[in-house]
Image (tube, rainbow, N blue to C red):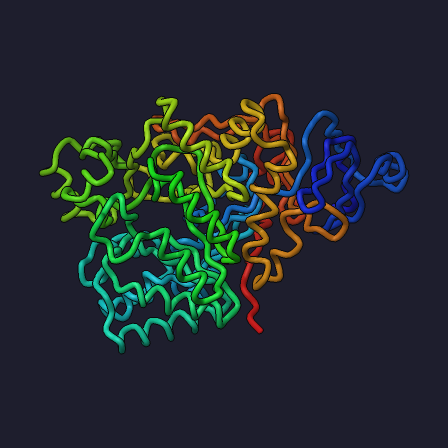
Length: 495
């Protein structure tokens, strides 16, 4: 395409903490210049110039926690400002298969996967053959044989599997501990030690916290703090809002103390009072709902929209289709007190924005489409389409809790840094300066907003005027380019 110049925008570099009205020059997949008056000079050299006066220009958002393995889902995320989408909480196994499938299909955004602790345990405990398929993995989550503690030989076997996945380029280890919360805590310590020894990281959906289950082997958030301190590993606490709920202040205080003591614990949150998971999950068992003040009616099936009416119906669904994706309301977003809890999770120092985005499902069971706009009837959690725009609207535009520089630090720079130590491709992402990747988002501060709702969850966000991935326009003038598939793999490179 030649040199492209974005002229006259409010340019944010979260790495240096600077903000300036300037031009940004892109050549191929890299930023080659940032400064005033580049457009005047570049125009004479035949550069393409796009006027972005009055708009905010920054590095594209890096989503550490997205289960979107589809073109349809990635297009929704692109219109939310995301340029890199990584499945690190759950991961896929084998990662070679996951990367090969994504490359063969084509991807709108950059992509990557962790080594799946869940799939490794299912391989050893159940004799399963993982196929890098999230839907198959969801079916396993409710199996008691998968949830139990491992014998010493079983533990050694799945640890070897995880290490082989790391050798193959997996981005750390994804640990769905919350789905097997009665397992021996020593297993988690061994995973942390593996991450420390390989120089990678863990990404954990923590087990039940003490307030939800006084009989838990260990408080889930305390466990990650303890493991980080004992192993020295970098450890990431996924969606602290949904695992802590109304006890988030206590958990955030614990994490703050641990970090002050030198533990390498990072944390993420998303701005919604409902989560999404498989209906067979441990914590959705009828006898577990009361621990979080939930009822069967707190659960709604994604594909059909059915709101679960009774314990009997919940029991039936868990038995017949444990992998069915559902939305679970755990906080009341209309309540000022609950809304304040969500805001405090986002406002916590260095808290990273991450979506936990889920795939779109249609009534016929399909989970992807190349059509745009998306065909009618697709269902998902609204966070797939709206997490980052909703965060910008609430934290920057409406409350002023974040400056634009701080917003890009939490949405772009900090998440890239979580994996940059072992993924070389991430080192040039998340910041905006000469040598940075040309993964850029241009936002209209006057209109940026989420539009997806629980009733209409695939409505794209607005306000992302332009989005470049590897120097290629995916979104231009607010419209998606349906022929753009510039996404590239991000893999670990272990020494």
